[in-house]
Length: 86
Image (cartoon, rainbow, N blue to C red):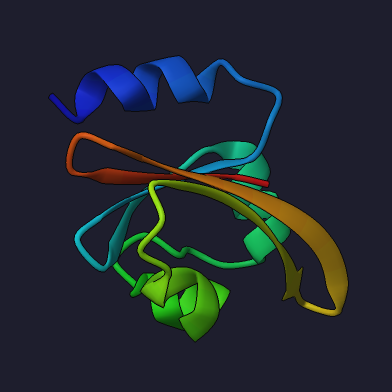
């Protein structure tokens, strides 16, 4: 079930990160460029901070600062995944 979203998001020109539970399980190449490191396997909290990781809303947007750059994160909960668009 994880492979289908990963294949679809790999075609996107938008930076996309998928998390399941509290762990990042996928980041497309645009997200990997923004994050400057392999974020797969790390916790959402360590990559994006506690505010994004602890939010309970099913859909929200928020400002995040990654490596001294400002991004708007659009976050959606889908099935058992947390989908983060940057």
